[in-house]
Length: 343
Ligand code: TXA
Ligand code: MG
Image (cartoon, rainbow, N blue to C red; front, side, top):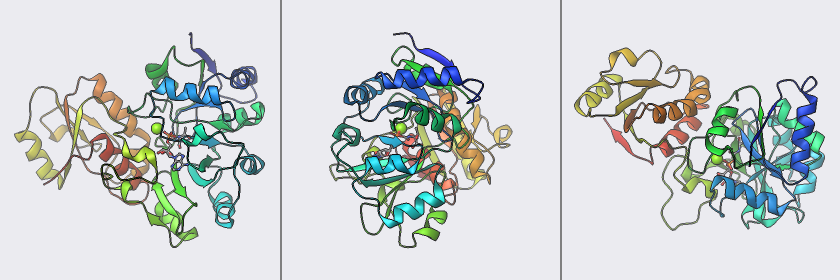
């Protein structure tokens, strides 16, 4: 299958391509779409065969549910069996934006979208191209990140094609994703509400709306083998470059010394901007030390760059865990398969 490239930078000027993408979705195809977080691999939520093709194209485990993307609150009502008061408040505050709510699943949503769970994850993206595509097609779009399962999420159409060219019908070529990391996921199907995955909407912002929200253990630590997890996606090794990533938790001086003592062929360091010249090995940087928004925006590109440079082992600096930094930390520790050395 040839993957069609459809350029949509402007929803008015590039309307024809937007309509083409909507037609592909309506006839059961798969389209890579830009969002403000990462690129998604979209299909019609109500078309079970299209949904099953998403899992095939990505090599995604069948037990990992998808997020359904909507353009307005009317669409949300089609998807859920009940819309709790807290969900309405959160929707007003955080939508459209990088924020996903797990809600009671309505009968219209095929079980396969939710990997058999009786809940459904719903998000209204702020990216205009994504929202307009949902509107034009008239379909809520089921979309995981548009990468091969396990590899870093894509933030450009080129990343999508690198992983999925020939396996999907089309990709929309558009602006780079601004946030750079996947959305915040919370569950409102439990009491108290639970943060399942940190993202662009921060824990601090959520606590203002939901003071009793708890952070799922899987956000910061490796889920125990064999135990059920609230968000199935959390149990997989994720976001990983092919290189072995090891996080070194400590001061920069100790980081430098450790790397100098452990240098071999193919050793790299993943450091903060400006630190590169002080290291004795090749470096890739992921934003300034105190700028977690920048770190989020470039982390996945940095992980992909490590692979393209032939990196075998990479020692990584540890980001702060506050604000969006919690999301950066959550992705990096998964890329490192939870391998952390305390200096
Ligand atoms: O920003 C994003 O959320 C991107 C863009 C494309 O919107 N999508 C994305 O999808 O990151 P994906 O499939 O890569 O991650 C979805 C996460 C997984 O960790 C999955 O386990 C969790 O959301 N999830 C989905 N439905 C769920 C449900 N019903 N209950 C618990 N967790 C759920
Ligand atoms: Mg993903």
